[in-house]
Amino acid sequence: MIYLDNNATTKPLAEVMDAMRESLDSNWGNPSSVHRFGQAARAAVEQAREHVAQLVGCSEREIIFCSSGTESAALALRGVLQAHPKRRLIVTSKLEHAAVRNVVEHLGAAGMCEVIWVEHAPSGEIHLEHLRSVVKKRADEIALVSLMSVNNETGVILPVRLVGELCRESGVLFHSDATQTVGRQPFDVANASVDFATFSAHKLHGPKGAAALFARRGVGIVAQLVGGPQERDRRAGTENVAGLIGFGVAAKAARAWLSSADMNHSAELRNQLETLIHSAIPDAVINGFTAARVWNTTNIAFAHLEAEAILLALSNEGVCASAGAACSSGSLDPSPVLLAMGVSPVLAHGSVRLSLSRFTTRDDIARAATIVCDCVRQLRARTGAAVNTKRHLDTRT
Image 1 (tube, rainbow, N blue to C red):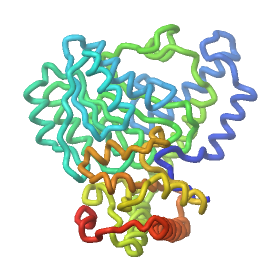
Image 2 (image 1 turned 90 degrees about the vertical axis):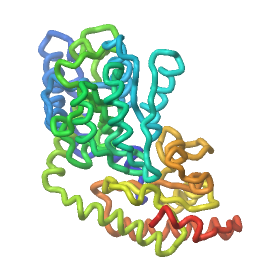
Image 3 (image 1 turned 120 degrees about the vertical axis):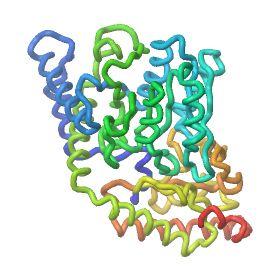
């Protein structure tokens, strides 16, 4: 198997699984219990919190453990709105992950907030001047600006620090969905000037069911899960001890990797994959090609084909990929992110995402490129798909 769906989830590290097994076997106490057994679990959770905080450059008190990136984002969006009832405006983008985009649409439709969608270029880059204009004109009304640091479908990078500074100059709170960033490239919350950041363990070779929200100290937020006093009264519920221990181990390993990683080498692998595919399939279009992108992600469109058919063909040949967000799999509709970028439906329908991990090899890339090209050719021969090459090459170059 060649696994190129790391934006959906990553394989847990061996040391992560070992630590979780040990926890489930011998350190399974309730961390809220006052006895020694419970306090051993508490100590393990707090050590994990320390490792996670070190990964993003904050204090342990600024980390709120959650069950998923979706919960983390919802806590930021809903929690800030409730903490600042006089501010009813959320500024975000149609390019956000559904965990943000759908929540904001729901809040707007329910009359709980007003929404302004930031303009963006066909490359997937946010129009900073439009954002600046909105923030300056309506700073007193804005509860939160929420823009993702790396797009989960295209890998396009947001200049987070510039956005953070822009917001801070006007006294506006800034949340960034950093789920596809943390553990893959350096992300320091102080340098990024974010007030809130969402990220998840299973995107950085940790377990599912463990995630975090960075909430800058002193910034108001209202808990969405109310009950016990866990997470300093910001998120009730008995902690997933084994999952959080695994999160901590994965965070520690990611920090060590980032300190020695050669991002240029990692990007070369992604570029090699794109070059091999484009050389064999000249009309293939790389969505977001002209923008700065994270090293591990490419989103490639094959006109007049359906992504589902491509993915099934790839799976039969041992290559795992996706058509965008994993939570959208099974849908026959093209990606709303790609459509919002202005990608034509004929290309959006045939777009697949290939996402690498730090363990992807050159051999994986070479084999995957061959399989992708063979599958596309076979599907086109079978369906008789006709392609106007010139028409679809403009966005690639």
